[in-house]
Image 1 (cartoon, rainbow, N blue to C red):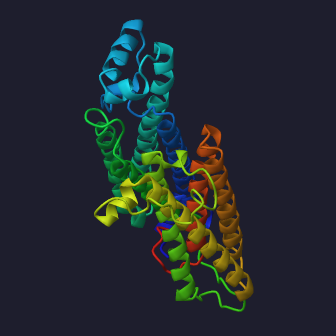
Image 2: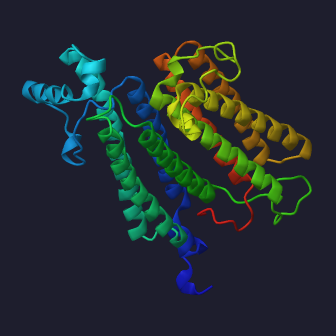
Image 3: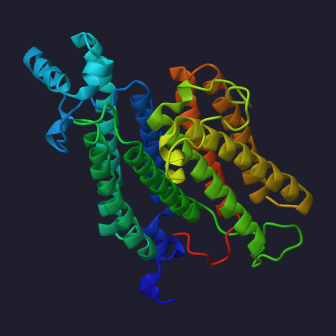
Length: 367
C-alpha cells in the first residue's frame, strides 16, 4: 500500500472517507420515515381523509391554508368531490380540517423523505463518503421515490370525479412501491452494518448458508409481501367492515359469495368476500410457514445472527396475526387498525433481516 493512501494513524484514506456508520444511520433514518409514512397513509385511508386535498402541488403545497378565506376555498373544492356528498355531507369546517391534516401530514412526510434521502445522498457522494458500489443503486432508489409521489397523486386522482373513493388497484400499487423502497433501503443499510457469518454450527468463516435456506427465506419474504398487498385490497374495498368473525365467515370457511363476479379473477380484487378471505388465507399460510421455518431452524442448529433473526420473525408474525384477528373482531377500530398497519411493516422488516442473515459471502448487498 502506497504512502499516499495512508491517513494519520495508519488507516487507509478510503476507510476514513467512507464512514459506513454515517451512511447506515442515514439509511435507517430513511427507513423509519417510510415506516411512519406507510402507517400515516393507512390512517388517512381509514379516516377517509385521502381526497380532502384535491390538487397536486409538490412545491407550493407544503404550505397549508393559513387564512379563513384559504380554508373556505379549500373546503369548497372538496365539496365538489363525489365523496363529500356520499360520505361527508354536512360536515363542518372544523371536521374538514381534521381530515385535511391527515392527508396533509401524509404528503408532508413524503416531501420530508425526499429531502432526507436526496440531500445526504448528494453530500455523501460529493465528499467521497459513499462507497462507489452504492452510488447508482441509491440514485435509482431516489428516482423511484419521485415516481412514488407521482403514483400517489395518480391514486388520489381516481377518486376525484367518477368514483366515491380511490381505485383499490392504484392504492395497492402505491403501497407496493412503498414496500419495495423500504425493503431496498433496509437491505442496503444492513449490508453496510453486517458482514456475512457462518449460519450453522461447525462451518468455516467463508461458508455460505445452504441455498435451500436462502430460498426458504425468500419464500417467506414473498408470502409476507403478498399478504400485505392483499391487505391493501381489504383496505381499498373497506372489506374489514364485514364478516367480523374468525375463523369462519358467516359460519363458512369459504364465504358463499366468493365467486359471484365474472370473469373469476375479478373476485380476487373487487369482491369484498373474496378479498377478505384471500387475505385471511394468506395470513394463515404465512404464519404457518414462518412457524415451520422457525421449528426446522432451531433443530438445524442455526447460529446468531440467523437464529436471532428467526426469533424476531416468529415474534413479529405472532404479533401481527393477533393484531389482524383483533382488528377484524372489533370491526376495525382506528387504534387497532393503525397498529395492524405498523405490525405489517415490522413483519416485513423481520423477513428482510432474516433473509439478509443468510446471504452468501460476496452476495451483492450494497455493503
